[in-house]
Every structure is written in structure tokens, then in C-alpha cells.
Image (tube, rainbow, N blue to C red; front, side):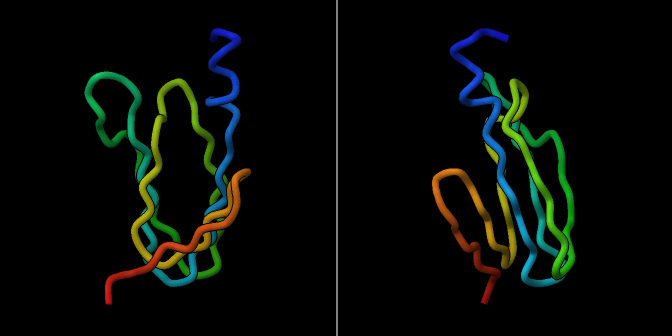
Length: 79
């Protein structure tokens, strides 16, 4: 891994489900973005995810608290 990529690949995200059935989906890096991993969290469960040379984005579907180095964000479920 190159030195200039370390800032991207060392970022962690903490996701805490605020309801049952929160989906966390990892998306690939490269010319074609694809789903490469999926997890389902129930209320109160916590997942710690990391951006890597394979993961360029994380999609969260459902009501969850997301904590990052840049601040906190809340996702919302369908109403």
C-alpha cells in the first residue's frame, strides 16, 4: 500500500443500530462500484467498519447512529 493511501484506508466508522434490521453494505473501489459485503444489525448492535483498498464506500439503510472522525450522523428508516 502506498503512503498517500494510508489516510483513506485507516478511517473507521462506528455504526450503532437504533432499530432491528439495519443494513450495512460495503461498496468496492475501482472503475465499477459493486456491493462486496453486507451485514444486518439489530437494535443496540454496534459494528466498526474500516475503509480499505477494497472498500471505498459504506451504505447504511435503516435507523442508525454513525460516528466518524468527522462527526456524528444519524440515518433514518423509511417512514
